[in-house]
Image 1 (cartoon, rainbow, N blue to C red):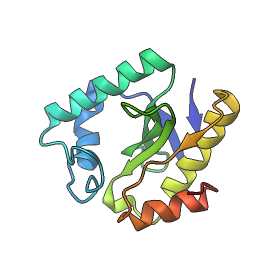
Image 2: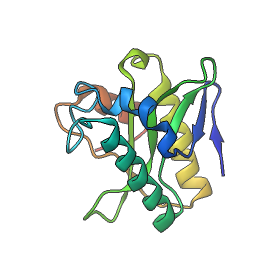
Image 3: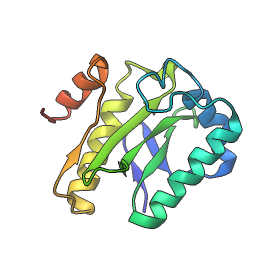
Length: 147
């Protein structure tokens, strides 16, 4: 199963992607609103990827690496996943800071919502967002999500 948009290819990540993904998840500003914060090192990012792979194994879906088609760079990740203790599926994403405000998160979010609702047959998808994260709240609203 693959996903793509005009500017993004979605890929299942492997441990080989850890150094590139660390550029995103190792950045404290990018991960400011993520529980646990930024990964302290590439080894932690390798573990993150292993956890994502395990989620895929348990549920048949999860988070994807986002590859910008133009540059072929891994610029972050986005996907649908369960958060421990919640019955709903969450839409989440994190992009390298140099890719903020260029429409990549909106593009990925649209593709993921369509995939989740139409292909996976999910009845509900939520976005768990810290109240101070105005940019992500605005994005969720642009995606048609509501409080």
